[in-house]
Amino acid sequence: MTDLADKLTHPIFEVISDVSAKLNVETYVVGGFVRDLLLRRPCKDIDFVCVGSGIELAQAAARKIDPRVHVNFFKNFGTAHFNYEDYDLEFVGARKESYNRDSRKPIVEEGTLQDDQNRRDFTINAMAISLGKNNYGELLAPFNGLEDLDNGIIRTPLDPDITFSDDPLRMMRAIRFATQLNFYIEAKTLEAITRNKERIKIISQERITDELNKIILAKKPSTGFRLLEETGLLALILPEMQKLKGVETVDDKSHKDNFYHTLQVLDNITFSTNDLWLRWAAILHDIAKPVTKRFEDGVGWTFHGHEVVGSKWVPRIFKNMKLPLGPEMKFVQKMVYLHLRPIALTKEEISDSALRRLLFEAGDDIDSLMKLCEADITSKNKTKVNRYLQRFENVRQKLKDVEERDSIRNFQPPVSGELIMQTFGIGPSKEVGVIKDKIKEAILDGEIRNDYEEAHAMMLKLGAELGLTIAAK
Ligand code: CTP
Image (cartoon, rainbow, N blue to C red):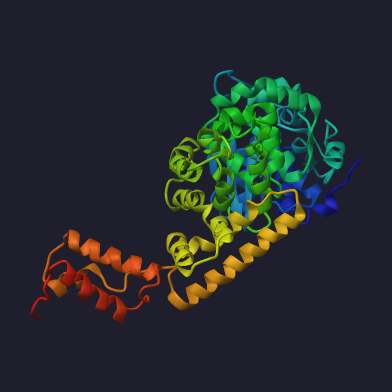
């Protein structure tokens, strides 16, 4: 018997144990908390299952902890929940569940602990720790969950076809846990994912995307994407990415497989950022390569304009994935659009004006863009990689120098449209735009400095050229 009493260090467990004894119900800590406790991963969500009413247990526990604690409950589902310190405590009565095949809505019946464990997703998530007075701390793992945890295996407690059919999101969860924990999905379970993949269609996009984002935020997201691809789920949930896969050969010339290249870029960028959106930019940076692909005689494979087409696709992909359509999307779009620019800078003698233009377009996102470009170097040849990284370092340094001199990053026109209108006594018109634009171009080209004096002088000159006269004060 595995005794985990000394691991239940938080006083809340004693309280729940006392209250359960008083109410005469068996209570267990279950699911993710038990798994994470054994893996020594921090976990702030604690799920309690009791053989009886979860709502009554929650209310009695909350009263004992602090009568001011507010308990939320859902009578129809027999669940209750409250927050205590920074923990999220969830209570439910043990259930037998069967599902309606065409929806996620379960038909709930009261059950035993064993029934409750049967209906859980994976053996590692189906372990319970007793809070009973006579066996406090005892681990109940009927499906060898502890061995699976030790061996790093994801496996369903029941026939996987049943477990996945009951809740198809579990197919994504299996892949997500395999990625986060660096576990293997047992062969039968993996085969069942492939067999049941179409059932993912009954799951809401928000829940699918939530799992996908957890995969993307893992230490090595490529593990998850390989599994999604192998099982056929990727083609259903992110078809544009599936289309990156494959190599074509003409005249003995092959292009690289853009799916595996993208995975490498995604893994690379995990070393420099935890930002979900920059990771999404890595996923989408080459997304339009398949549609822009050409074989040109004497040149080989080209993907002209893939950054432009790709950035135009970002809003549609974000909308389909139910990802936010505000600044996060705009950021990803910008990254995709600009991702070739720093590379172009490493190939030529770098002019200050090219650097200023890049700073102007990237603004405060220049550092993210440089991270994406560095991650985009995926050659197997170490010397080549180092050479490129060195050149990027050089570009970074030059960007810094130019920024220190000219402050282009958050470019604000040194003369405003308002001032142009006042100076020449004109209203909003085409001329105002022309003057502003020419001043901006002159600054980016280094013809004038980014300051008021020089911009003002240029404004007067341009006004005269356009036949404008200075208005009397
Ligand atoms: N569960 C399940 N099927 C699901 C979702 C959850 O069987 N589709 C069960 C599992 O036993 C899981 C528990 O409910 O351990 C709690 O679920 P949840 O809080 O969503 O996940 P965790 O396993 O705690 O993991 P994480 O917090 O990383 O999402």
